[in-house]
Length: 504
Image (tube, rainbow, N blue to C red; front, top):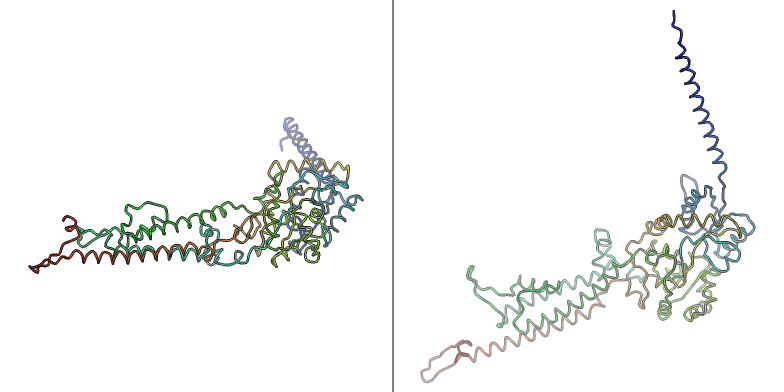
C-alpha cells in the first residue's frame, strides 16, 4: 500500500503553492506597472535645422536616420526627464527662412521645442530659451595659403610615417633643413682646411702612434661645428685669424637659426585642436579681435556672411568702427559678399581671397574637415550662447535648463562636443587660429628664401675667412724668407728658425 502523506508534508505542499502564486502575482503587477510607465512617457516633438554636426541624415541599415550632436544631446536629456524626443529636420533652404518657420511653429504650439539657436534679443522676445548649451561667436574663416596647405615641403607627407611624428621638423621646410645640413658639412670641412694649411694652428707629434696630431683634424672639426650648433662647449678654439672669423660667423648663424626654430616650434606645440583653443564650452568668450579684421582688409580680402543670418544683422547694426568698415565693404558688393547658406560661404572661401564671417561652432567643424585648407583668424568677435527654445511660459523650459546644467556639471556636454567636433576631425595638428598680419607666414614653416639672409651671412664669413687664410699663408712664407740669413765673407748660409731669431 502507498503511504499516505502526513500532515506536515501537506502543509509544506500548500506553502509552496502559496509562495509560487505570490511570486507570479508580483511579477504580473511589475510588468503591468512597467508597461504603464513606458506608455506614460511623454513624446516631445523637436524641430532643428539640418546642419553638420548638429543634425544631419545618414543611411543606417537601409534606413535614413537622423544623427549628430543634437540627437545625442536629446537622448541624454530624455533620460533625465523621462521623455521621448522625436527630432524632425526642417526642409533645405536659407537659414533665415528655416529659423522663421521654426519660431512660427513654436508660437502656434505645433512643436514642443526648437534649436539649437543663438540666444539673441530678437529671438528672446518671442520664445523662452534654456540655459546655454555651448558658447559661440562670430569668427573670420579664410583659406590657408596653398604652400602651407598641401605642399609636401611643409607637411612632410612624403615621409613614410604619420606627419604628426615630425612636428619637430615643422618650423622649417625641408629645403631649409637640407641646406643647413650642407652648411654644417661645409663649415666643418673648411675648418679642417684652415687647420691643415694655416701655419698658426697647433700641430704636435703623436708619441704613441707616430706622425702628427692637431686640435682640428677632420673628426675634431666636425665635432667642433656640431658642439657649436647645439650650444655645447668644446675644449679648444681656432688660433688663427681665419679660423676665428669662420667660427664667429658660424656662431651668428647658429643664433639666428635657433631663434627662428624656437619661435616656430613654440607656435606649433602651443596649438590645440580648433575649437578647444577658443573655449567654446566656456561661459564667456574671448575679447574681440578688431585688429584681425583690419589686417584682412589691408590684405585685400573680400568679406561675406550668410544673408539675413544673426551675423548679417550684427554687422548691419554694429557701431564699432572696424565692423562698420566691414559692413560697408559687404554692402557695396552684395553679389560677392552675401550667400544663401553656410556651405556657399565655405565654397567661396576655398576659392581664395574671401573671408567668411560665421559662428565659431560651424567654423570649428569645417576647418577640421577635408581638404584641410581652411583656418580661423583671431579670436571671437562676439560671444553668445546657443540654447534650446520653448514656447513662452512653458514649464518645459525650466526642466530642460536644470537637465542641461546637470549634463554640464557631469562633463557629458563636453564629451559630446569632443565627439562631434574634435574626435571626428580629419586634420590633426593643423594650425589653430592666428590673429596677426601676414597669415601665410604664421601658419607655415620658414621657406628657403625667407631664411636666405642667414645663409648669405655665413657665405660672407666664409669668404672673409678664405681671404684671411690666404693672407696668413703669404705672411708666413714671407717670415720664413726673412729667417734665412746669408753671412759674408765666409759664404756660409745659416738657417735660423723664427724661435731662434726671437732669442737673438
